[in-house]
Amino acid sequence: MQQLSYERIPTSVYGTADEASAAVANEIAALIRQKQQDGKPAVLGLATGSSPKKVYAELIRLHRKEGLSFQNVITFNLDEYYPMQPDALQSYVRFMKEFLFDHVDIPVQNYHIPDGTLSMEKIREYCLDYEKQMELHGGLDFQLLGIGRNGHIGFNEPGSHENSRTRLMTLDQTTRVDAAMDFGGLSKVPRRAITMGVLPILQAKRVVLIAWGEHKAGIIKQAVEGPVVESVPASYLQGHHNVSVVLDESAASELTSRKAPWLIDDVVWDRAMIKKAVANLALILGKPVLKLTNKDYNDYGLSDLLAQHGQAYDLNIDVFNWLQHTITGWPGGKPNADDTNRPERADPVKKRCLIFSPHPDDDIISMGGTFQRLVDQGHEVHVAYQTSGNIAVADDEALRFADFVVDFNDRFNITSPQADKIFRDAARFLRTKKDSEKDTDAVRYIKGLIRKGEAKNTCRFVGIPMENVHFLTMPFYETGLVQKKPLGEEDYQLVTDLIDKIKPHQVYAAGDLADPHGTHKVCLDAVMEALRRLKAKDFMKDCWVWLYKGAWAEWDIDQIEMAVPMSPDQVMKKRLGIFKHQSQKDGVVFQGTDEREFWQRAEDRNRKTAELYNKLGLAEYAAMEAFVRWKF
Image (cartoon, helix red, strand yellow):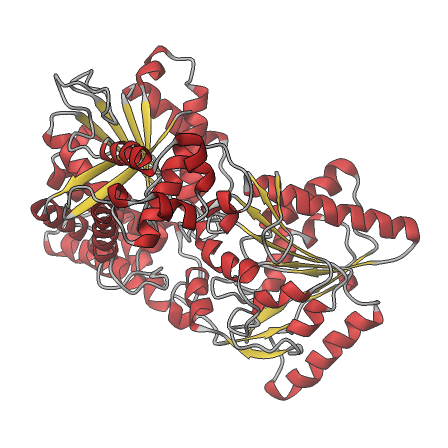
């Protein structure tokens, strides 16, 4: 863990969300124990969402393993959707019970969560009483916060005033889009919520805001380093007397301390840091690397780099060559060529390549050009689809599929009572399914079959034999809900066994930590654990691991270690490969804030990567796919 001093809010960055969550949980536990010694209650303000889950898991562990009691704990939750029944899948009452309250010894009368069942005329009085209850207990000793991608804290959306009180709030479109995953579509997300106001949050004696993942990095920079503005409610925390922001490395990635650490403190000018500084300088100035001058370096805080490593002319040439050496049209290595300055080895000429695809379309969306090139250049390419991706199939698509099977059997007099019953029951369920109702096992299987068929179709299009296509259907994913189970031994073993069977020279895996679904990160954890378990095997000495990103982000230019260029024809062929995933076209279940289809997102990202190389003074290509090597 590293303490930072540049930000307007004290900020701590941890290597992983697990480490950060444990630190926050330990602070809460210490407060609870101190209050117990003093014979007083510990009054906590609690948050929901994905960020605090691991904090609550650690508090449960402290309760079970280390005797932490919650008998003296009184809690007030930040918010609740309106209207919302307490037993609904998306209810924050249900969330808190499932992730904390049902697993510790807190008395039922001690926790308070806004009531989403009230009539409209009772809400104002209820909100006044909610704050009065906090005051009667002496105010909040500790407030735990997450942050929305639009900067909201609680459901205090952009535009909320610093003196706002607990109230009914209309939800921002960004907030509703982010919640669409949980509700099974944007149209099903409530438009309002009851939220604790900004003022009572700021009145807490201690406030800790937590955030994990790249998708939070941009708003964290605004909240921590930017001005205090109504458009970013989290920025109000800059005025609190006892506040901390706790992040993992991904959420901190846009902070100046990470983007340009040389502006803050002395740095070690190794190759990676030099490449980062010079590439960023060139992009800021809009100059090719080879045109940077000594004055450019000095004007932008890089005089120390010049002092240690000579003139701009020499540094420019070094960085230009480092960037040039990342570009290759031979992702599997170029046969019979000097590979000294190439990202991949020449030998063996024919490599066994294993592409891990978290969802059934990540392979073609994220690295479709490289995928095709590996096949065309004669390598033995395998694809492992880690999850079924079934929750991303719309109900009407599954109903269409079920109806087809029933009609097909009827038309051709195919008698299979068991199969017929499965599909008829599934069709009946889909026609009467209630909003947010969990799919039956049969419906989930049908949706999985749809995505499996699409993945196979893509592989045929690229030229992969079916025996090289592997569907792992990892158990952690198969809950039928957005919320997944933790990785288990069966998940690890499935991945480990496949790698051991194929004995690849190359492994490609999704390193996309900006995935809003979180599935990419879980799938990457499984691959990394499997590789660690196999590390002692002889074949692993020749196994290189390349990480790609998905539809949401790309590697920073200074991080890229292999860039595979694509011609306009190759871009079009990749698009056609993506089109094979018909269930993910023309609007998807989890669209996110980006209304473009996946092929449009992928093409835009690949084009922008190529444009970056062009801006830095290198060759101009139509598009590029980028990779970072993980040296495990």
